[in-house]
Image (cartoon, rainbow over all chains, first blue to last red; front, side):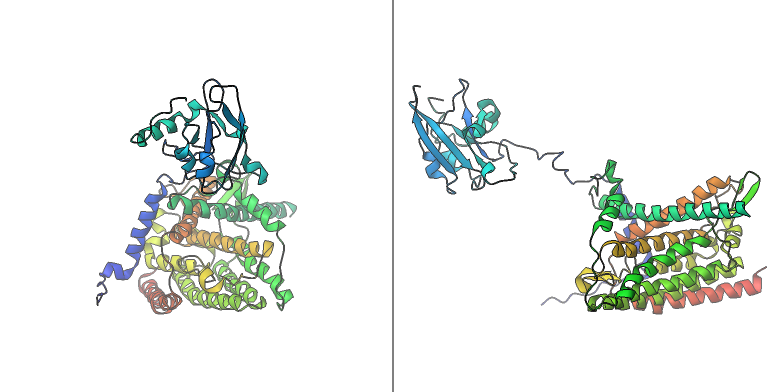
Length: 173
Length: 336
């Protein structure tokens, strides 16, 4: 058991007013300090390579998506947010997605799709803002998911670096 | 005669407008200052830097629905906000905001009314302010409102004694109940009453905080215990009127503090300053005391109700009595 002794107050403290003045001087000094609030929409959050935002599909330099619609991300997705329909293509890779949808309302931004992808076709972008008027508008189709590789490069480099031990850059991308 | 009436009308419009404008500015300043003291930005969306926030607030108050609770005394419920906001607006009439202006050869005393019993008039109106609070709380037919009103009125009545006694010692020093006379005796810097009556100044300032229900004595409203306070059941413009009354009362008390203790429009070491500068000096001093109201609110924790009553009756009241007695004795034996 701890017995707390009440602190003996000095005369100035018991008079209360000197302490009030001391308190006032503290708040007055704070008055001139810079606010630490971030004005969000005008001053966006600092975005880092570690930022794990919404998943996006990589568009290679030749204008095609890197995705071969293998369905691994679809299988890895714990929230069942991804839907893929594949189709044939004359390109060397033979398959490409006809339909690639991510339901952003279901996506939990876990990054499993990024880890599962054997073709470096899907990466977590730094895009975090998600707002619309209908649910249907938040199911992103292929066109809305496409991003040029350059836009995702920071994240791609980061993923290569941290996954270096077991993952090598894909031979076809 | 017409000219006299016109001058009087202009003074009424200017002073009353200034009072309402101050109340509006204070509602913004309250939020801005509190924000700055807490490393925040405060309201900054309406107009440049949030300047137009009071207008937006006012508009919202007007648009909202007025509710009258079931079982409330409708007449008193409706009249109470007016009773709460009127006294402060009336009290401003006797406060001299300058010595006298000379315009086109006419000497115009700068106060709406030059009452010989100005101090008494303000104290009487201060007493009336309690009615708005207690009628509003009682007519609401709500236990929270009633408890809040009882608490607030008990506090206001207790601190009114200290307020009056502090003012009385100033009246003894100046030898007049006329506020214009009181500022005349303080023309020189060293004649400011704060130097001869420092204790009365401290007592008066503390009592004004309690009298206007401001922090750390804001017992009229309290969310955790009373779901608001005496104005729990009020909404829309009637609620705004209580608010307006509080800010007007603060302005009047700040102006009264300036007038009684800080020389009113007097400027240190420049007794012959132009009248406009005198008015500016008065406004500046009043603004400081208004700032003090906000400043203290964001610095001190509030008292408990029993602490408030003990402070009022056992500390402030005896101190003000001692101060008054000493002042009286000094004035009787050594006074001129």
